[in-house]
Amino acid sequence: MPVTYAEPSEIVVHRPTPYEAREALEAAIAETGFTREELEAQARAGRFETALAHQTWYSLPPHAE
Image (cartoon, rainbow, N blue to C red; front, side):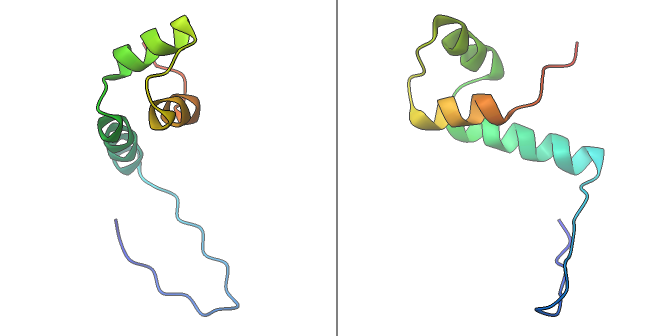
């Protein structure tokens, strides 16, 4: 991801490319130690194995088929 320098009074918005967004989602899922399918199963059961799994699941966009 490119590094952006901004003056303190500036507002900088970074709009990731589709590739960057996909990479960030994959990294977030990998950090939980579960696959997306495992996270979905935990969500369906209403029991997440870790707080990170719970937080990550609710931050993911709907799965595109």
